[in-house]
Image (cartoon, rainbow, N blue to C red; front, side, top):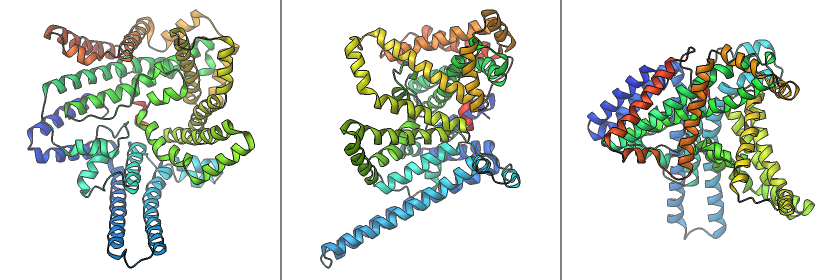
Length: 526
């Protein structure tokens, strides 16, 4: 039951009806039961893993809180009987116990994630016997394990840091981790941003429901009209890349970038729209990434919740650690102030993006994805003084619109190439596709034949091109501060319903025109 199925639509109507029908005190229970029902349909017996994560993190967080409270109480009672050294030693002991408790919770759940998601990959790459590898073939990756594990660990770390108190209601905490709208493809929510919204009862408001339905329709448009149609061509070319020349591969790279954006951001729009109907505001996960002028800006606009999570729990702890402070000092003494300051940031950035790459999947393609993004950003930081000198010498107007457009196109091209390599069957296949672009451009007739052979056809290509332009136009307006849904809601009833029916018609008509049917969401596999 995916977000794009009729079963899911029926499920959502049922959940919303029950949610607004039951008394306020039972609304969160409706969400909890619905979430576990939904998750069990998707994962069956593998639901045991999300239950394990919920239980271990719940217990660890309460244990950390109680250690803190006991320490504070003990010091308040005995501070007059203890000298400064004794107080210092007691605090250090308490901190050590809290850290061990935190590490137990982290390692227990990271261990499960690593074993289930990366176990076979690790066994294959350390050359263990085929018997051991075959013994891991029974593993079926639980749905959403990367999302709910990171969300749970973020909560546990925040409790350890004292950002907020531990949740003492196991069932409510279970809802926070298993909430059905975020379980398939995120976003990775923070406890203080989502939990209270889930626990608090919400009333039905027509205006919110109207905006939520419009956002859902826009998400379905991006998924079913753009992403699934582009997938017809991209899947054919990536699967049989040897048969295609440069121009066909270039189109596949461009369309795959549109496909993954339409698929992922479309799915997020659907769940955010449903949540809005329920009165819940979920974290923004995309902010028009195609307008990014650099790779680092792109990652501030793309999968925002993952980037924010890795910065808060990996990048900053690394860069602010004592080890990196010593490293920074050593680099400064050896290479000067700028490089001494920049190289530790580059190392932390590469580590951060390596984690992001591995988070996406267990293959060398994703290792490359992380290292490539981290490497590009790091290289930009290292060469920043050189770029500044070149700009000064050439007197480039970096504030002009033309320069901004050039930067956007450059970033789009670079990331499309990286994604093309990552989406290939293997790294060698990805680099072969890149070589093919420079070796043989092919011709327009071959491109037309490839489009027809994919099942898209000429009419499908026109539909895809037009839909992509519509999406770009909407995002241009949003980038310039125009709130589309709010503007539509202020129009008269005729304009509003023309918009609604127009979107519904476009989705149903052009979705049915796709001979390959509705495809699974790409990020559901993560």
